[in-house]
Amino acid sequence: MGVVAFREKSQMLAEQYGWSLSTAQGYVDGETFRKRHRPATDHVLVGIDEYSLGFRAGYFNRALSSYTPTEIEFSLSPDSL
Image (cartoon, rainbow, N blue to C red):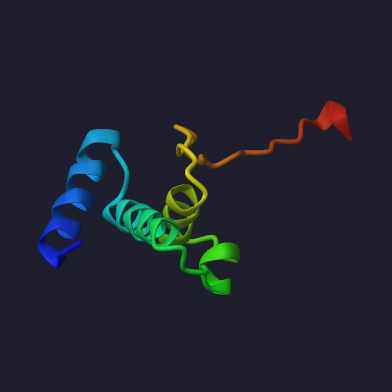
């Protein structure tokens, strides 16, 4: 896949699914590694960054969920103590 096609596919996926560009680039790279039967690096297999998340989804042929992490607030009421 040429560099131009890679950028275009990454951009299209990011726009279509609302992913970050980093996630989309990882997805395209993972898909390419899978199709070429290349082993994934340890970093992308255990990484928690957006690129690694996208890479694993493309490499293992899985859809990314629509889960978006949010901040969880804990509050203690005087009654719970």
